[in-house]
Length: 232
Image 1 (tube, rainbow, N blue to C red):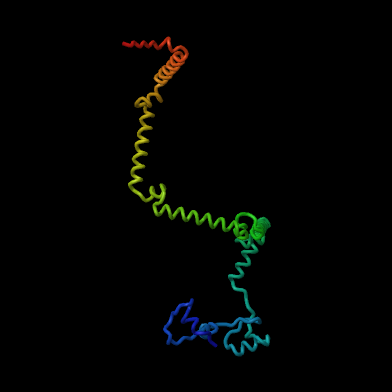
Image 2: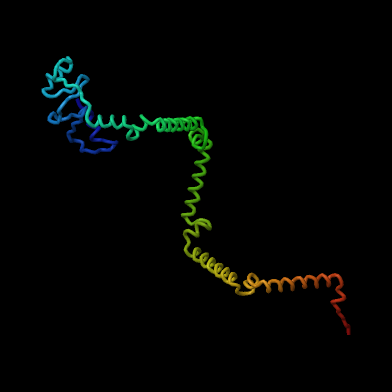
């Protein structure tokens, strides 16, 4: 019994073999007889000669049908679990580990129920079309902004793509840093005003006196302004 040859010649929807090639596609995998050392049945393991052994296994009264013995590895696994080794051993012998696993499973179930009920952001994404559409629009907007930046649109886009503009801005930033350094060092008039307290107080006093003089002039301008006009 064999299956369709197209499963081999047209795997995954693509032609993978010439159209005139002979294909053998058995319905079941066939193991060469030389590689078979025993046949496992419900009544035991049957070894060669298989005809007599299978008959005895069906009848259940022939020594050829040998009972299945647990492999040594299975015995080691069973002893390990019984002794509390490994994860399975801890779960079988340590109530704390078993309770922790049960609590974790309950939390997973609770989260699943909340998502199915539309609770939380993930639940809204799964159940609320409006929320999902809003998130899709936000994502689309971010993608659009990213595309504009990559195309060099806008100030930020020009900074990313226009080397000349970047160099100018870098130069301006450098000069501004230099100015701040000079101010902090007390250089120039502005720097001295920041660093020299006496100069600041003197200038502040001068400004106060000037304000007082202007106020007095406004109150009695004739006292300070004597203007004579002669007409010839």
